[in-house]
Length: 129
Image (tube, rainbow, N blue to C red; front, side, top):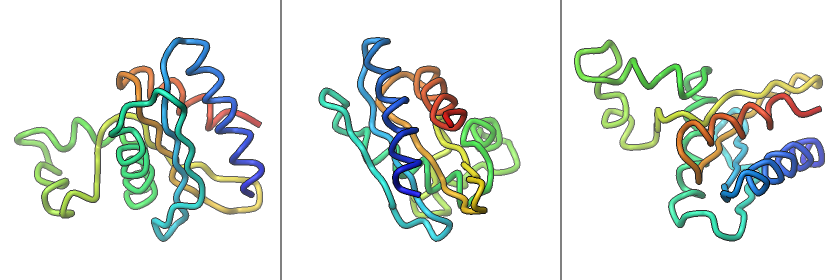
C-alpha cells in the first residue's frame, strides 16, 4: 500500500516541480491517521499542516474538499463547519478520497501551490496507476 501511494506521490511531486512550485502531499487512513507524508524542499511552511487537514477532511466527509467550499460560505448549509469541528476540517480545494483496488480508502491532501495548482496535483495523484 505505501509503495503504491509513494509512486503516486512521486508523480505529483514531479509534476509540481516541472510547473515550478513545491508541495506537501499527505495520506490519511479511514480513521484520520497519517500513513504517508511528503514535503518537497521549498514548500511553504504551512503546506504539511494544510495537506494533512485536507486529507482528513476528505476522508471524514467522504468528498472532495473543493465540493465543500461553496457549502461553508456564509448562508450556506454547512456554514460554520470548520469552527464546529474545532478547526480539524479544512474545506479548501486539494483534498479527495482515493480508493485502491484492495478496497482500502485514503484521504489524500495536497498543499503548497494555489488552489488550482493543488487541485491539479491532487488529480494527478488520484489518477496515477
